Length: 102
Image (cartoon, rainbow, N blue to C red):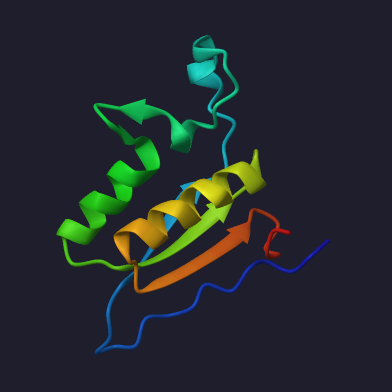
């Protein structure tokens, strides 16, 4: 068993770090049926993941730790695309086991 991931602390006078849990299967949305991971599902022109990032950024948060699990590689690619487009200050991705995904 691997040790739990260490969540980096924000400096007391530095920008806050937000943890986004993107590790579930999205089983309650299984009716969509096309295999798209839940964070990548679109709602009114933005994916659920991007909608979360935009909301945080509008509140002044620009550092994110995304916890991955189900479909980790696909979800990671989706979040990395968002981070590049939205110019997030810091991007960290961790699998649910605490190790960095491949």
